[in-house]
Image 1: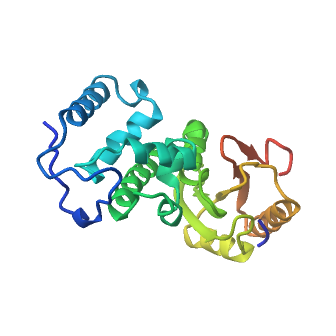
Image 2: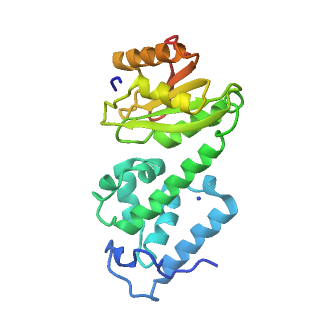
Image 3: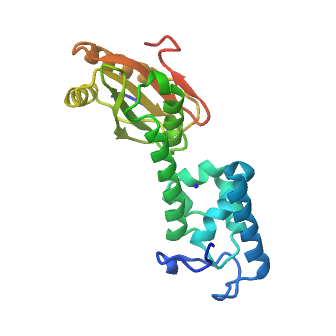
Length: 254
């Protein structure tokens, strides 16, 4: 980076034509009993034990049942997990990369992205309009949910009021796999528009390694200087990797 969650087996009304052949086509209303029984068992286990009672491949199967109601989804589940490693990797993969997997079409992408958007919105609701100090772990969880599995860099700014309550979370820019343009003047200008008193910067490293680059350090220093000149505090800059994050303040870089 540089500067700057009785079920019907009926087809869903949307994207019905998008069902693609993953195995031999099964005529409508003729779902084999072994597939129907398997689906019912998975649903019963999910309802009784929740997601924690299921491995990634079974949770993904449950999701794909909706998009592909009359076909065996096990082959597609296997292919998706082989390509994207885990459940989180599948639901957060870009549509372009998902389409590289045989059997994926608009219906599958829609189901996956609904789940991803729901997870992000739930995580965001746990931190917005709450004091950051008392919800720091929830904030970290939100940042990982929103950014950890992105294929390209994204830069976000969290705006806080005088009580360090999170009043806004905004994307300031998106870029490539290792670069996103960031403009200190625009960051500070937006803080003034929101009457924010403090900032937390957040961006991701698609490589998975949250170690800051020289450009990350330089850009952070520029934003800190611009903010200080207007009486705005820069609390931290978080770099989000695949499974961990780095805090500039904890690392002594602020």
